[in-house]
Length: 167
Image 1: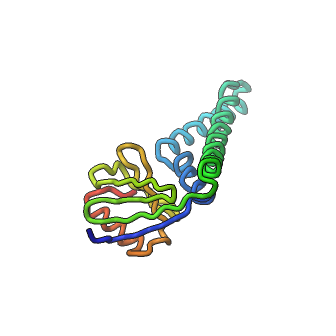
Image 2 (image 1 turned 120 degrees about the vertical axis):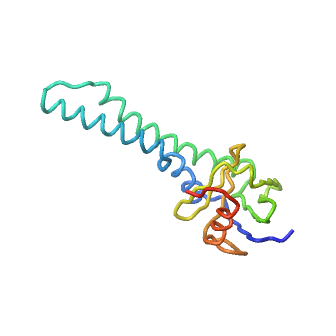
Image 3 (image 1 turned 90 degrees about the vertical axis):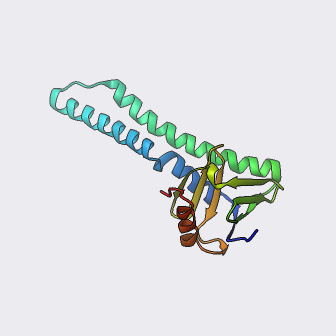
């Protein structure tokens, strides 16, 4: 088993925020829904100005929707940080290796997860991360600047060569 890529990271607040900012604010379906909500709000404002009437439900629901999204994001980040501190007493470190057969990550807690390529559901890139989501909804994280063997560009090419779509 030849290790083609190796990556390590510490699950700190900055990393958690980047993951959940993608989950709550950058996914295509949610962006479309955000745009629809903004358009509803703007059209309601236009109706208010032109026809002197409005739909108060839109004025109430649109801000509540955005407040709820930000609250859920903030809450999820806090939960992960608190859980790591409470259960493990510190931030968790993860070492990930990539071979031709599978991807394996080993956490400082002793947990080992193995992912075969046919079980990768999707791959997305953020500014600093490559996120692989498995069919079981586990997220395998690669920090772009934390490869100790290989690099982010070659890893993306490797995944594409395996037939995996990378967004």
